[in-house]
Amino acid sequence: MPTNMAKAKSTRTKRRAAAAAPVQTLTAAEAAVATMVAHGIDTLYALPGVQNDFLFEALFGAGDRMRTVHTRHEQGAAYMALGAALATGKPQAYAVVPGPGLLNSAAALLTAYSMNAPVLALIGQIPDSDIGRDLGHLHEIRDQAGIIARLVDHSALIRKPEAASRLVANAIRAMSSGRPGPAALECAIDVWGKSGPVTLQAPRPAPAIKVDEGAIRKAAKLLGQAKRPMIVCGGGAQDASEEITALSEMLQAPVLGYRRGRGLLDSRDPLSVTLPLGRDLWGEADVVLAVGTRLLIQLRQWGIDRDLKVIRVDADAQEPSRLHKPAVALIGDAKPILKRLLADLPAHNDKRASRQAEMQERQAVWHKRLDKLAPQIAFLEAIRAELPEDGIFVDEVTQIGFAARLLLPVHKPRTFLSPGYQDNLGWGYATALGAQDARRDVPVLSISGDGGFLFTANEMATAIRHRIPLTCVVFTDGAFGNVRRIQQERFGNRLIASDLANPDFVRFAESFGAAAERVRSPQELRAALNQAFKRRDGPTLIEVPVGPLPSPWEFIFMHRVRGE
Ligand SMILES: Cc1ncc(C[n+]2csc(CCOP(=O)(O)OP(=O)(O)O)c2C)c(N)n1
Ligand SMILES: [Mg+2]
Image (tube, rainbow, N blue to C red; front, top):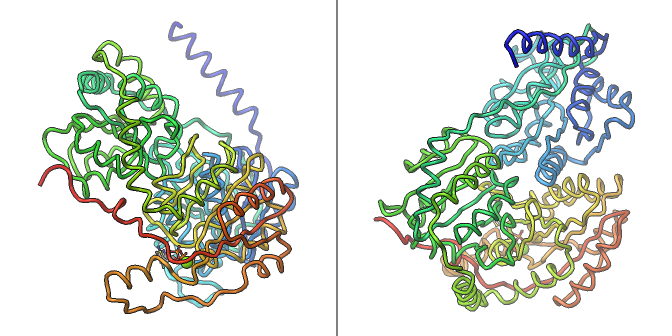
């Protein structure tokens, strides 16, 4: 197109956009809510309080355009937003009062940061002109903005209605541009309700990142000529499952996903591996393509040397060189980068024999050794038999969870939610509740130990109130079992702070109005899950009493296979 024509067209487009966005008189809260709706956020997980009264008034006014799901504790609201974000891949939001409300939600916000999850936190504030004066207002906390700035990369204070829409739009854009992650906006008690002239901001697409063609060619050559290529993927590869599958096939490269990378290559493909086989393969590889992963276990536990060339694909330009200088770093979204790599690779790729039979054999050898975890495996088999392929499994820091990371077959991306490097006990139930709320079309299964479950079990009331059909299985051993086993094995049975007094979990769940039963074997668990997944109007709890379970740690913390 000639330049003058292009200019005329862009002026026309701008004029049309301006015409479509008239100035309206809105409160800051109405502007914030309308902007979230325009950006596809249709649910706010929230717990009210006086600082945010005008926000809830705006939510009431928004009617069906914005659902408000209120929880029983702020950590529940924030974990629910996180679960919804992880299950959908789309931005989600929660709102809480300042001070204790913010701090109650902080573990979930921290987890959203660690997992690069697009969660928007709306946080109340004391009167605008008193912020920072330490006067002792209700819920005042010193330097709230400073605390927030340590938890998220993007934050701002809404000070007038005119700015509200732009600040919300900027926050949502920041949440999914570059390295995704949470954002937070504060707004004072006397600002949410103020009216002013507002131009609602429409969503703008994330800035396109130019793919480095030279780096693509270098990566394609390295991978094409590699004798033992391998792919490692993490949470940043969630949307590139198709490309990873195609690359694996083209290169006959095994794909390692341990927690957040599970399911990117279907577990039924013998090239799809977890730990510990992944570590053996890392020891043999000559070129590794690492997609959306910090590669911490590999570089720190398993080691690195000059014989291994690493190609990093990451949305964050800082990440690839943090621990080790890669041979090639490709910066941007995994999907378009891997698409370009797939287009270039055939020109450089060696003829490759199928590794299917070899990998099948090696998987079988490890499965024999992993049989040490037979009691956990039997329960996981019952779960896999009933949970449909697109059903979502939400992991916890519990014995069955550790085994699931190694052994549960996962068929699709975003169907295995695992808490990343925070590995925070108690994330499970509320995060799963958010996943189930956002994905009503598939069953979601939360697993917990008796320790982790009681962190957010109060949110069963939320499941009842909002008719969220989450199924949870609680494995009860009367202990912080993981801690207890370490005290037995490493500290000569000097048991401290690891035995638990439990409620009757079945009666506990029933008292909320949930369906509940106790089962005593994998067969009984399977039958109970079958019934639970059919129940679509409310939650189910299944308690499974277990004894001490065999330790998985030898398969997780494994010694070095490369370098010094
Ligand atoms: C927020 C948080 N606090 C403490 C821990 C330490 N921790 C790891 S496992 C565990 C015990 C888990 O007990 P339970 O949920 O009953 O699972 P089990 O090991 O008995 O299967 C604890 C306290 C943690 N991971 N996260
Ligand atoms: Mg336990």
